[in-house]
Structures are given as structure tokens and as C-alpha cells.
Image (cartoon, rainbow, N blue to C red; front, side, top):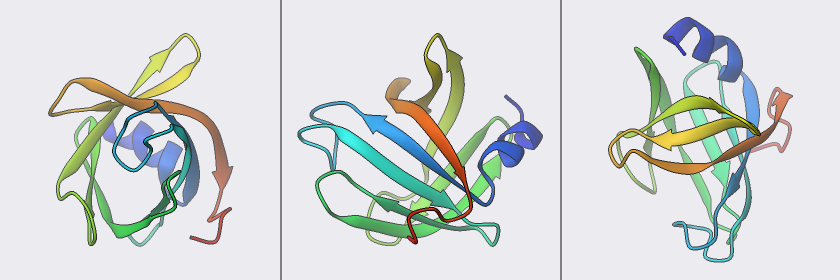
Amino acid sequence: MDAAQLSALITGNTLYVDIPVGAPGAPEGGTAPIYYGESGSAAAQLPAGSKLVGTWRLEEDRYCIDWDNGPQNSCSQLVRGADGFVVMDVALREPRGLITRIAIGNAEDL
């Protein structure tokens, strides 16, 4: 997926990502809504209860987030899988989760 496709998919939308058990911020797994604001703002509500805020940007075939209260330069790619889009950690080359739903706007008021 290139930058234009990524932008069309995530800009101004809330992505619901199913996170596997044991992932950071989700020791028991769960769904994390993540909002990607048109202005470059980002916010996520992790299943364990903490909220992340920061800024996001597009870089070629990926998007990267600098969380104010979490990881910096956290880059992901979206890869189409059998069950939907898989969020892949660029550095680790491991899945972070599966997008189960996309809502227009800041659906969770993050």
C-alpha cells in the first residue's frame, strides 16, 4: 500500500485494532481504537486502560507515530490478510494487530 492509499484509509478516521494477548498495553488482549487526525494528531485507547496521544505522519509505504507518552517513531505498514488489514511493526516485522473496523471521524472522542 502506498502513501496515497494509506492516507485515504486512515486520515481523519478511527481504526479499531484487535491486539493480541501479551502485547504492550494489552496484557489480556483486546481492541484499541486509534484516531488519526487530519492535522496529524493521534490518540489511542489501549485495552488495559491507558490513553496515548501524539502525532502521526506518512512515510512512503508506512505511517509512523511519535507518542508523547509512549514509543517514538513507531512505524507500521498495513498488509492485506485473509481476515482484513494486518498492522505490521516495520522494525520488528511482526504483527501488532488486525484492523476489525474503520469509523469515519473521531468515533470514540479520543
